[in-house]
Image (cartoon, rainbow, N blue to C red; front, side, top):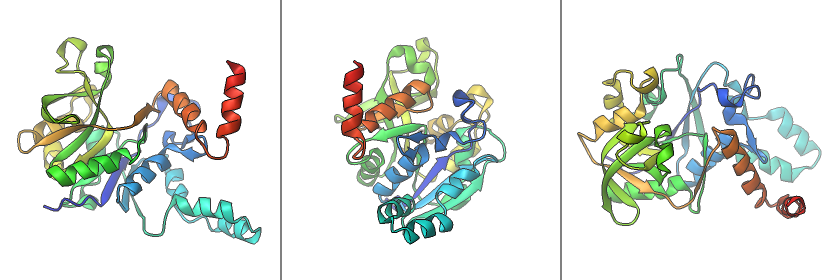
Length: 289
């Protein structure tokens, strides 16, 4: 099986209820952090990792995501006519010419595992990445680029992980296993959102995966799990019985932009390094302290 990862799946069909009323008519993935929507940060991360086919698993209210990555003829013509080349370059960078965007509908919200399964016919028999736009990940190289490098080296599925306080294990998929160097853990167990007293460790899965195509067959075997949904975690637990799965302690920072606090933290931190506003914004912050 090839060790080249060329496709990424973005499950974006969720309703974003934690950001109501802002998400009543706008997808949560289109919420801007400074001047880019969350989904664009995730796509740029995948692009940096060498991935060129982006597969979006969408829902009925997500048309604006398709529009964002589509050609904006009227806008581009207006910018060109007014000699606004810098802004035109910004628009062109949203979707480089060598990037392909493909869309598939998840008709019913049956969980993350089901969303990934919706992309099976587009992924085929290839390894692929899964990125959750709620998790804005910052690293150099990008978190996904680090994970693709690990996949190429080991030839096994790779999950991004981080240590979390024990009081928070019930919010995550939690893994346990045997350390293989400083950053790799050979996973022997994974469980979705366990109670504190049942968690096998405090090593939590973040929103980045590089997966073997065998995961599709394992997801298809799963009954509904936690929350009455088809869980990707349960599919990975089944995959563990067939082949190696690794946890990777990534180098970088994760912002949980599925929560208001994480979203605000990401906005402030990224504004502080934004080339256009960083200096003035930091001055303003200092004046408030």
